[in-house]
Image 1 (cartoon, rainbow, N blue to C red):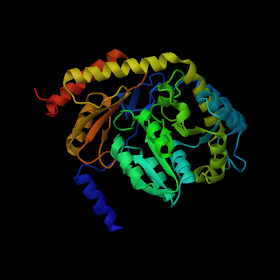
Image 2 (tube, rainbow, N blue to C red):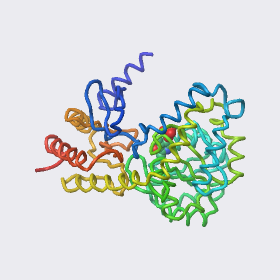
Image 3 (cartoon, helix red, strand yellow):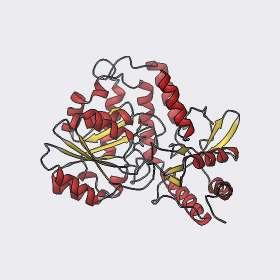
Image 4 (cartoon, rainbow, N blue to C red):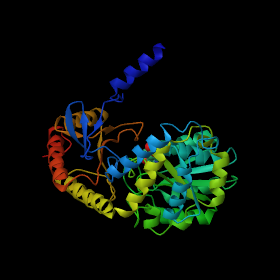
Length: 392
Ligand SMILES: *Cc1c(COP(=O)(O)O)cnc(C)c1O
């Protein structure tokens, strides 16, 4: 295994080595995290609505834990299908205004399961270059041809659709809000193109569910496109603060997935307490509008403060705010300096983002106050000057 040692050295030498750090939640302060003894403002969590510590979710999970135990004991098709699932899936279908829904253990497995169930060797998947890794892995496992189009480049997508016109099935897949850059897919155009080419359209709302739409249904609803999307996917691990994922669509689609989605069939069901927690979170996401309003204001405040300070940041209005630095080592130093000044924010480096686009990826929470965010920007600005990211 000597080669591993060499490869790890190589990663370290190019500032690409990753390692695990303890990070403990701070009860009652969802906008913070403990790193060891140090309390840091958490600008790297996906708990956008600040629900991960919600007492009502904790309570329902505790009750379910005491009644139903810690584990499901089997996959959903065997004896792991707690009745809590059918209640949750009915609520999900109602929320998304679609025929049916199916809960998966997490977003990664949902993407891998759905793509693998829908396409195979004779098919093509058209996938935005910036799509999440779980979509990429789903395509690879499906054995369909992987046609990557340049980020949000609809002309490139059309060219690839023309090139693959002989394929049996065509599936277009996109993140609704891109997980690294925080910008939006061009959903209106994707709907037009999918209709024109007779393709299926799948949208991953991992970073837009809970945040967009009147009841947090996601970006497709916000734009009034929900009926033109064939497969809606979202997670419960980000805005919902819990864990798990859903697929919404037609009754037929859901039946097909129950029969063909391997991560659903060959893996143990979520613990019942998690399913109960998701149900409660789904309710809160719909009724606690102030969380959605707050994250929207927080995103505006933070984005405009960074711009005023002179930073180049990603476009859009989402709570994902990338600060592109480029160089891996400098990005790592930036992240270390942030930690020293009380801010947790990770350096995102290749291969998560393309070479030469290493970045600090800030993510916000409804729990952050304007004051916390503008104070953070003052620190970020000072570090930007120190490291020469901002010129004087
Ligand atoms: C986080 C994420 C996933 C995976 O979801 P998990 O529930 O964390 O496994 C899938 N797609 C996108 C776009 C994501 O950001």
